[in-house]
Image 1: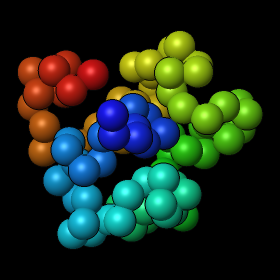
Image 2: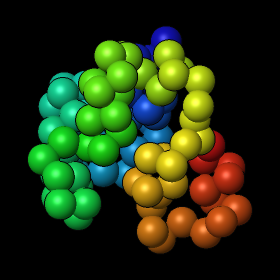
Image 3: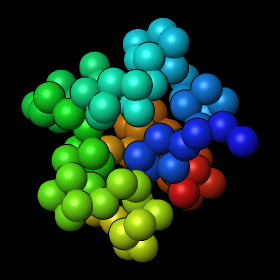
Image 4: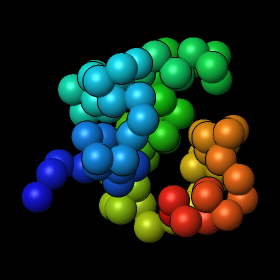
Length: 85
């Protein structure tokens, strides 16, 4: 089974940025290039997890939360976002 990123995405199978804009969230320890879009150095999801002392969103149990909604792909429709979560 493939290792999942902090938010539960299988980078190699599910992330369009993997191996193009990003080497993988785990490999980069959450310091992904697109975090700059939010004015951050690290993924907002990773920042949230670290603040809570957790390793993944599955450890929290609140997903989908406000942070997930904040980091939603702006190109995704409501239906695509719902299917993603």
